[in-house]
Amino acid sequence: MKTKNFFLTMIAVSVCLPVCMSGQEIKEPTAYVPEGYTLVWQDEFNDSPLDNGRAAMPDQERWYYETGAHGWGNNELQNYIAGIDGADTCAFISDGTLKIVAKKRNDEVLSIRMNTTKEWKYGYFEAALKLPAGKGTWPAFWMLPKDIIDWPLDGEIDIMEEVGYRPNWASSAVHCMAYNHTIGTQKTGEQLIPTAQTAFHVYALEWTEDYIKGYVDGKCHFTFENDKQGYKDTWPFDVPFYLKLNLAWGGNWGGAEGVDESALPATYEIDYVRVYQK
Image (cartoon, rainbow, N blue to C red; front, side):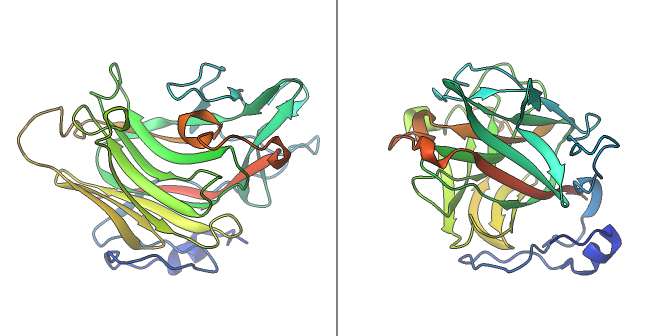
């Protein structure tokens, strides 16, 4: 599916600013990079199988795992593992994409939460994603501060979230002290992507000192502006943030209408992740 030569992939990149309008599906993922941005980081997930024939794992120089069955602030049900746990593998690269798999093992569900080793302040962040299906799935592509101490004071940026009981509705959001879901004031936007669970689409975020905008396939569905008041409560988005990929199972949102374990194993597929800056 993916062009293996990154140079050929970049031929298809538009240099026009994405337009804010309703979403529409695309057959192949295409980058929609705003004018003035330059590629500074990427993972194309083109790694070849290992010499022993096993699939490659995510590059540890680019990613690290967060592990445990802690609920993660949302009463999530999964146990995040560091790629492989015993005979179970939940993150691997094959055929040019990263697969994150949520799977049942005995009385628990294993999955993956992975974090970039590098952080950025401002930029255009995008990933080509194919979302898992099934009630209980909760895939995300998002950001937290490098030096987070206090959530929501320190901020959170959600580039893409979707829950399996509401399939194909992709959302973007920000959370901070003044605007967050625990008090019902979160700032969100969404659009329906009819083939989100069967085809790759490009989910992206532009983050500047003036605004944060969320896109799918170059179409904007979310805008949050800096109020310029200088208060961290309303704009903590002026420090470096990491990128994160995870597939949660259940939880306050993912499990709001219950979970269906017949959907397991569920696979969240990532074609690439790219970061651009001015």
